[in-house]
Amino acid sequence: MSSTLETKSRLYALPTYAQPDEGDWAPGTCEAGPWSLESAYAYCKAFAASRSENFHVASGFVPTKLHRHVWAIYAFARHADDFADEATYEGERLEALDRWEELLEQAYRRQVAHPVFMALGDTVRKFDIPLNDLKALLIAYRLDLRSKQVNTYRELARYCSFSASPIGRVMLYLHGYRESKLHRFSDDLCAGVQISSQLQNIAQDLERGRCYLPMEDLMHFGVSVQELQHSPHSENVHDLMRFSISRARMLLVRGQPLVRRVDAELAAELQATWLASMQMLERIEDKMAQRPVPGPERGAADSSQVALRTAFSFGPRFFKPSR
Image (cartoon, rainbow, N blue to C red; front, top):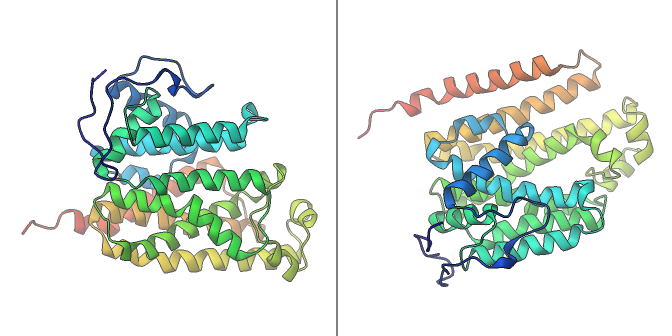
């Protein structure tokens, strides 16, 4: 294990310490090590691969040089998501999230022995990623524990500002974009992606007793949670879903200009994400219309189609002659 971190945090001008603390371990997350920086990144990669169902087709457009940093950020966020959702952590969810936040804060000050934070600490220093963007994700998971539903769209938008917007901003930082003027597009794009995913996963969320559709929308369309769960093809539910899909599309369209304001590499990632989310909404509409629901084979074909459409869209930008 390297005795010091190579890059000092430009955000917090705090010293980095040579020796990890024995109290760095969060129970149930990984083996005790010892870990080197390379093996820490390898752990994050393996963890990400084990949860590959959550990786977007856009990940295929991430430059190779950024892969390890995306793994580190994903491992940090997904572990925290597990604390909030997985049965293993029942009865100690808040304690686990609090401990995760402590380790996150420590990673900005020194080398942390836990592999996720060893890799994450290296990433945040190299790309000068603000602490508050990563802490915001933990706020979202605590909100999930505090309430199983949102009452208004304003509450949903606030939730997305913690759970989705920080991911978009972190991806901008990884690609070298720090201009705040890009955040408004990124925030809308990420909110649209998140709400599209929530619409696709309504049934699974309802089984866990959670509903991300605003209660004010259910009341407006005369839909109860029970009807949403047990009569998904009723006329009222379809009216509610059409409205919700339109809202998600509006956010995606509001965020889409970001694609034209960044370089070809990031633009390809963003366009693939945008296309995949639009396609997700189309598949929800197909299901509502009781057209044949795509199975796993169709899903794989959809991903390939998104990748091909993105490649054709951005091929010319990749191969522009340098000036």
